[in-house]
Length: 367
Image (cartoon, rainbow, N blue to C red):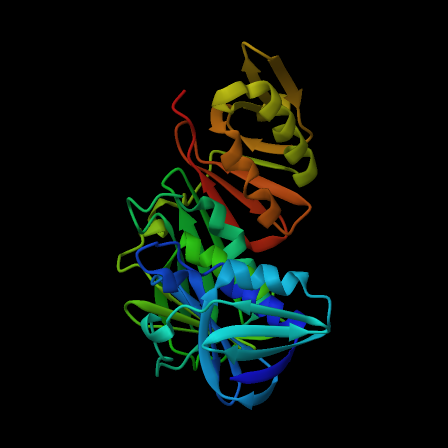
């Protein structure tokens, strides 16, 4: 194996792949990055739950395979000052040379390196890269960090008639992002549950890609994402996402419209005064034109701040977890938000005034 490659392109590929490597001591090859050199250079990594291949342009002298520990490899490439590096094999080990430096990295037997599954035959859904990133980021905070209930620890992705829908819920809140691609509906319709950690990895990979379009295909157990020389394969959850549309209120007792910035700043202040429980209470009295946020703790003190807003409906006193309200605000592409309360002990729905694509539902606290 021998090739000449631009260092920065190789380092970028290695850093992307390094995040996918496994940590199991019983199978050392999983902590390695595999270089496959044939007609092109493929930088590969897997942890058995997910795998990645990154194509890197290079001048190939000889074909070959080699697997080396990812940490040693990435640190070596970071320390090299030259613009280009030569990779070759020396007695089965990886030799890296560049502008007067020579490094030999002991290899691990690549025979045990798992083979990544091939692409599926189903017609993939093709979406703008930025849209897929936006869809996953807009809802990821609402998924459960635990996989005790896998469907709640995943992001539900639906593709139907050219419409991409991303939803996540931990049973205390729910976030939905709908992106209409404007296609003619010739793609395969699909529904899948992507575990949260894999969804966050997809976002990280796509943020480091320059591709305009991303193709997404899936079967019962596997998701494949392809974007400009990167192929990412991960397991998906075999389960059923809750029928969340049934819990979205159809009518509301109180509606409040306020500037997102005012609401966000009030929640930031409430975090300081709420103490460990992070609870905030709202007193809403439309006839008196009162919308007040209350937070208190024995250690810090208390606050009672009025928020400028347009208010309609009934009087209500209701409490929420501050994080559940604040987490969704960056996903709203609107200067103003509408808080729609369905009644005491019932869900709150948050939407942007000029952003119909996003919705967050938050359950109130008991007290």
